[in-house]
Length: 263
Ligand SMILES: Nc1ncnc2c1ncn2[C@@H]1O[C@H](COP(=O)(O)OP(=O)(O)OP(=O)(O)O)[C@@H](O)[C@H]1O
Image (cartoon, rainbow, N blue to C red):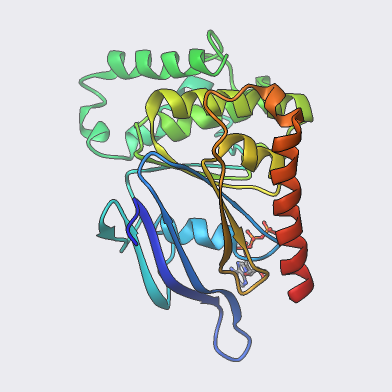
């Protein structure tokens, strides 16, 4: 099995042996290049741990993690990340926050001072795509939660990552804003073609956005079900009210209920 993101027989525990928490054990999953994958499972099953492994923030005690054909041995520079809490720096404008990865990730870092105008235009274009045209000069605290999360997506994408990692990015938003951002995400993925791994508790979100949903067992987590979602794209939001869509949501809910009961 080979994928753009490839985790094979991964085991990771937190802490020293006596009181260690085994978070993942025997986890295997492969996400193809350009694919939108969603990861769902019972609370505490190791979803965030999986994200840390795939981005090289942690290394497994057993098994292998490969991204773009290379074994991960440190932070993965081709990854962009967005989490539930947008954590924008309050002393920077929205535009300056969005441009932050360009100050860190090569080759952009070396080019930034020379090509600043082009990079500013790029960041402003991204803000416009997510519906924040003209808000670059505002500070994050002047934006609503939904607007901050839109800017957060721009920050995750400004350095053109080949891999986008999303850990519950829409979890704190109201239902309408969440659905709006699903559509923003759908369109960005269609336009830019990056590989995406989304961790979510929201099964509707997973089925609407993903090409494939991975269901994890209770802790120690491993993949117990892989469900392909083949609704044609672009998917309209009304799809989420159709019977075929809800059948898949129910099916996934059943798998998670079983996983919880087996824990
Ligand atoms: N730094 C840590 N030290 C000890 N245990 C940890 C640490 N981080 C996570 N854990 C434990 O490892 C397990 C997996 O955690 P993780 O955050 O990956 O799960 P999750 O599926 O993302 O959780 P949730 O569904 O609540 O978001 C949990 O039992 C958690 O308590």
